[in-house]
Length: 406
Image 1 (cartoon, rainbow, N blue to C red):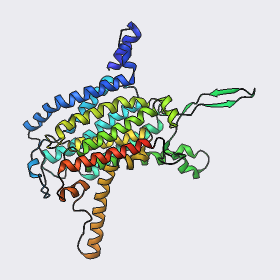
Image 2 (image 1 turned 135 degrees about the vertical axis):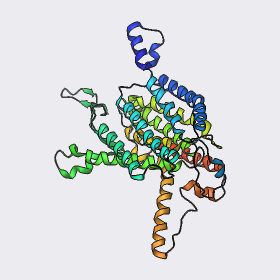
Image 3 (image 1 turned 60 degrees about the vertical axis):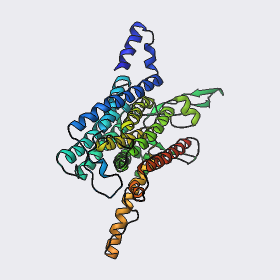
Image 4 (image 1 turned 30 degrees about the vertical axis):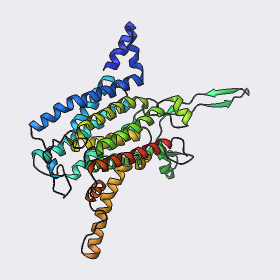
């Protein structure tokens, strides 16, 4: 909103300083400052309100150290993250940008699903919360919306690289690349690091590229569902999901910045994606909200994010990664989420297999998800979280390095 106001003041009255709002870096800086302020100042008020309404976490006794002391800690703190993200975006973002619009929809959509899940757990006293099939259905519908918009919307394009040719008069001529629809994506670590989803259906014959949506949209649905559930599983101890997510989102912000800048993308020899640079404003606000939330969520936590926060975080990360064409980098960049999800799948599969084979279920880990395994080994929460953050930073650095390592 302020973006359009100052744009108008600059065009009509040449107001001194109004032109600052045309700079992406300025708006991103303002967004992160405002989101931090909202999360840290109004976050406290929200926590007090949640305490007043007795919206506290019901803790299952898993035999973990310090677990009983957490009973009654306010939950639904994801509301802080959502509010501290959306307000700066609405003020400083370009609300006509299709990428920003999609992320606002994603934030609200996943926030509502998570809120319903938390509401059922707390007010209906049902520890299982929203039934899994309804939760997955909501994720699938969101993936369908995101996939369809990214595939069919005319403003979601990629720009072909500029090149020089020798014309018919034997003179060097520069040909400016045009924007076009494309479902190409990056494949990390490979020299020719491009994958065109349209090639997967090339066996159809001439005009096969028209049916690339049959591959692209299901992939988007899978990624949105997998990452949001991965973030949800990671939210198990104080500060783990929030800190890990901040590292991941900041890295995606770097990708959005270079992919949306014609000079940087040309220098790094990566895709130039017009209009995707505007994501930096949303990402700045989101990082600020996550860091501000950590002020209250770090050990010992004064508030939990609940599914309201964890599902939203996972959904936003997945959608941003798809937008900047880095979805195939998710197993590396979101390695913590991946490890947490994998530990649960391995544990369940091995338990069922050994129960069929030996009549008694056996376990690979002392407890799943993975962070609980280390708790069972008597590691303090703070040590587990700090080490997971360090691993997350290492994975983020490796992910950034893939811009040049091929």
